[in-house]
Length: 250
Image (cartoon, rainbow, N blue to C red; front, side):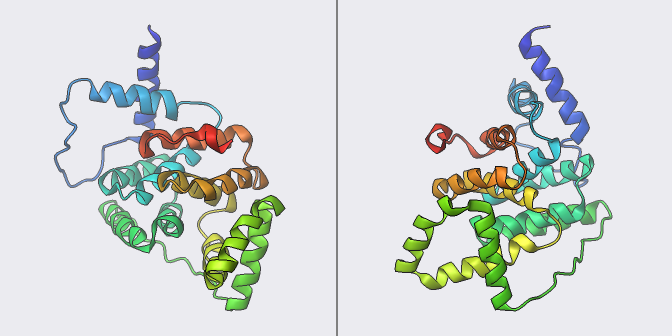
């Protein structure tokens, strides 16, 4: 068996594990069906060469993939991967939370569009959408815990440029970021902090926010991701977000 055949075999195993493309129940034509060589290409280069790599749990690979697809609003593919995420065992609450989290980087309308498809997928499979209670706290508490979390994630080296730029141009935006970004979204139930950093890293790759991405590459080890896992999150995004010059981020 050639190396390419081995990659295709591994890719088919991943597809089988995800039952990828077996949903939605409502049939619709796929533009890629029947194009010579394309299934082998994606099976080999995406599922075989990337999804089958060691170094990152498949759960984090799926969270990263969902984050890229919702951030770029690749909605048809996003819905397909929602079904695959359910097939591999991600909880409805985890899946529902991904677009909400990524709205920090791709905008709230992206969450609305993606959540409509998440809930459509749930309905097709007889799953009730989670109604998770989110404890409400004061704006002062949001800001304080947001500041503390940002310090935890980035440390001293991640503070200077962000603070000085926003202090000069838009100090109120800095406060809103502490309150509703770090203080609200990151504390929602449904995804733990490590998972949120994975989602953030993938989303920032998708929207080409290299400056913020550098900070979150530092944050990964601070929440328990190894250097290898951080690198694998970047590799996972490549086939879905396109190329980014990662060497410039080192």
